[in-house]
Image 1: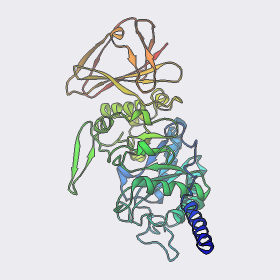
Image 2 (image 1 turned 120 degrees about the vertical axis):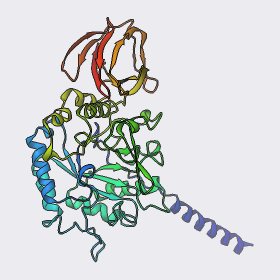
Image 3 (image 1 turned 180 degrees about the horizontal axis):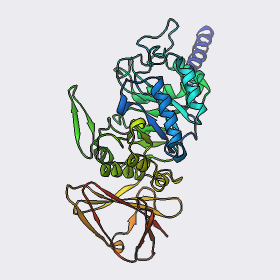
Image 4 (image 1 turned 180 degrees about the vertical axis):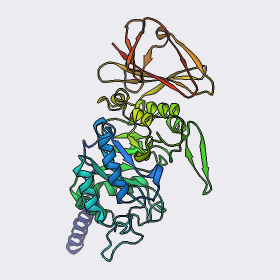
Length: 411
């Protein structure tokens, strides 16, 4: 009996040891505080796809500074898919494409840093990237050290070729790997919203995509031959319901890179930019700076709209009303003011005659309110940069198809 008891005790102790070992949890998580306002910068994909090289990056960095975009807040240059060779080296390390980047990636990153800018790279949670280059699956900690040693500041992490793995686990693993590597790197989850990253992404990443790829149109769906779709910016703006409560400082809903300056009209570019500012989305330009028109630059560097996007309260706006095809979107700001955007969704010009007293604002997610019957706000037109009266009177204006009027309501 004593032998049996001793054996049972040893077995119990052994079992407890294994159980304790198996319940150990990692407590790494993302680097906190790297994106307290929505990140601003440029990404190569929308215009260039995989046709990227050292010359393009240097020219883009130079123009970002000389044009005033850096001064306006755009500070990340992110190289998307296609920057690497088709195979890893003999040690399993990623290799920058020697033809596209003959001087290596470190020299290029140092150049970008010398301009006062930050640098980002792309990879994918799967075995291969979306364009068929080496993915990170199975190499998470090795790749994280590679990025840290290069001096990378931002990682966009895609979701192609991921059969057999779960999004939350895969992105958590890469997040932990980046933290372990020891360099603060903004972690951008590009999972397309298929696995509701807003529900689990806050401790994992600094921003997460909420949709598939954007397309340079107002409200269209572009169907690809491979049986997937890209979306016009207003399709994306309204694609997800009830997710604004998950977004805020250092954990942003990402409505994708901008198409401002890419094939749409100047009016549609204005509306696109205004909506991304109202939605507190990251402002990542996707156009060719070397061919940028003055009106495109003026849109992208509008300091009044950027201030709405970068407001430290960090609350995503929402649609308040729709009347005769004109939508009214509102966003609370940290100084007690509100940003209000009138958007004409129709193909015809419209006349606005908005009675503020009939449209009090109640933010059900965050508790902010504006009762125009009790309080008066001064109106500032953020595109024209001039006074537009007050909420004592109806707001009257004409608005052409697909255009916006954006006001700041100052108490």
